[in-house]
Amino acid sequence: MKIKNWFIIVVLVCLVLGTLLHFTYEWSGEDKIVAIYSAVNESTWEHLKLVFYPMTIMAIIGTFVIKKQKNNYWAGQAIGILTAMTFITVFFYTYTGIIGKNFAILDIASFIVAILLGEYVTYKIITSEKKYDMEKISIVLIIALFLSFLVYTYNPPKIQYFKDPINGSYGVK
Image (cartoon, rainbow, N blue to C red; front, side, top):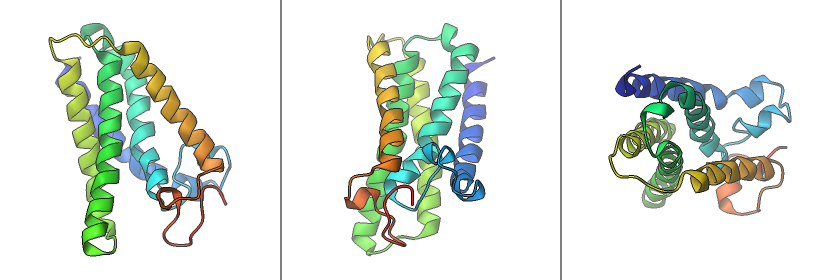
């Protein structure tokens, strides 16, 4: 499969899967296992799951589809995921800091841009001729992010980043 075609599929799957993950916790009857990979509230932290899990799942699948074709595979994946997560955080706190409140349409748009930007960065890194010697640390970083979502879903720090702005809760209820 051509790498550009693969990334078009990845973006579409991530957008659909990320959107569904916004609702799966509620749909599951607030199942504690589903909470690991679904947004359990409206906090910024929980919304990062909507890009992390789809991008990570597609990265794992991609190891069977394109990894043999490209260098820097996991470096590109890790940097792309971090780019998407960082974009959502920076965009949200910048626009809400300026305007004073959040708007769902801007949050949805930032999710879409984050996926596009993250996958674009991934694509550029893995198609680069430059060799980045950071495959192992990239995998460790993705595992550390997974463990962070696992821990902070059930035991989040009591800071604004983890607080649901609607009901003031933190993590799983």
